[in-house]
Length: 260
Ligand code: ADP
Image (cartoon, rainbow, N blue to C red; front, side, top):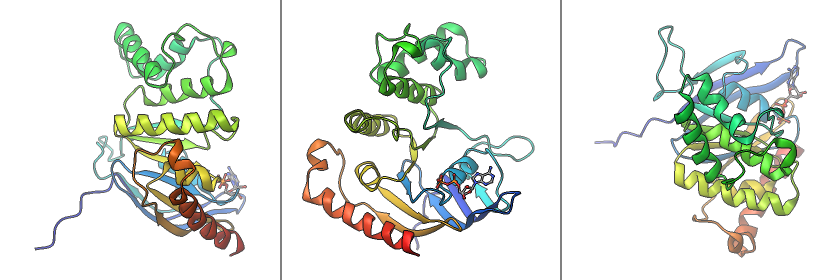
């Protein structure tokens, strides 16, 4: 008897997005994302990565196709109650609130009481390496620390899926590498599914179990790479022949995508 495949967390079928000005941002994307996977969307600027991520978040509907969340709860109208966190390229913190004030916000919006919200936020800040910075204001924090607060705010509700839109693109290389390591540790500890948008081959290989390579005009999937390197991945992996080999595989696919 054939063994039943576990249900994916999210299933995209025939997803097309055309904006009202006529731009065909995404065409006929089919993708299943299993529970717990770390997946990167890799491609040149303008290939529809952000558009796809935003549609996963429910920010903008597809023009055609379906996005199903088979294991999520649905409301009375049959809409999925997407249990997700979103991290943008900019940390988008409220400058008048402390780190704690920023991280408690999603819990307050869900009606969680103050003491529980603060305890859970302190735990989330600790998980991103910011224990002791609860009372700091964004202006007192470095770029990397602000991004850590932004990640703490996204995970404080313990979402099933974390969507990240080039979150480390504006950071210096050393900070970026450190955040890559800390993100992998968070992911392996917390068990969420991760969808990470990047145009960096190196970052996508370092982080991901799977890289979906996209091409532009129209945005579409060109390759689906299973990165066979084991976890945990650390700085030794970053300088290994294995890493270099996977970077070449992804880079060749990206070149094909750009030239297509
Ligand atoms: P990426 O994230 O890969 O850089 P985007 O998803 O941001 O790509 O954009 C894909 C295409 O859709 C681009 O050509 C972009 O200019 C266009 N686009 C994105 N958002 C809008 C919008 N709101 N209205 C019109 N065109 C848009």
